Image (tube, rainbow, N blue to C red; front, side, top):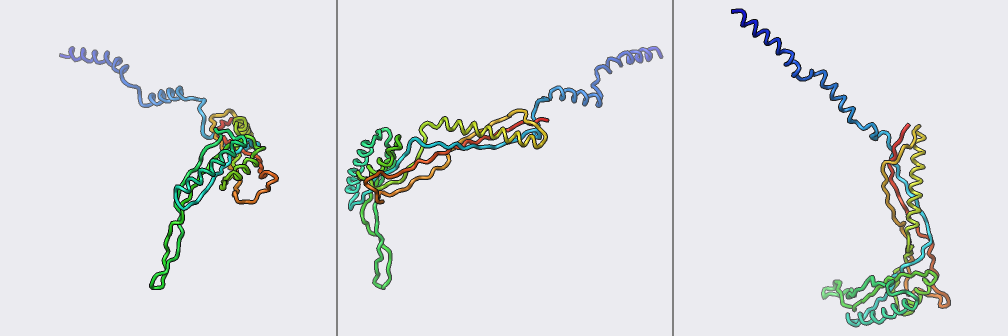
Length: 265
């Protein structure tokens, strides 16, 4: 009766090594293997936030303008709308002829405003009880026509303004100066802004006992600096012996950059 028991025991002992070989790793071994896998997948060249420096810099380059935009036109008031439009049309034809005679090409003239609106007078009307109330009364119609012209020869700018006023233009909004081909001045401002950013990064890095390793990202943008406009009215007295004096000054272009640097020891 005992022999079958010994046979079963022997069979169980023989299967034990195979079962052990198929058992999962112990709780202590698994974390070690996972740590090894994670270390192998880590990028040792990745940038850590504490080793970066964000620098913002800008530079402004000034240059004399080579052209100007003038905005002028006519304003006429008449009793009826049709009379007002006819009057402004006749005066505006004189303005266009004056601009053409001053050397302004048709492609450099553009209508920038055309309007017609009623004008009212506000009166105080006395009531029977002795009080007064405001009342509006149609006084006429106002027609306006505005043109923007590009003057490519700044030496003729003052004379051009005078000629269009003498030809019938009675409104003058101002002058805006510009640079026709501004690619070069923009690039000069961008280059200077980048140089300033690098110099600033090296200064901060040196003060911290570090060095600039490389540039990670660059973001840039540029904009024109606001330019003052010359405001004038056609009614102002002008010296007939000389054209209206106009000074172009300089136009400034500002370029700004935002650069992320990686620092190292």
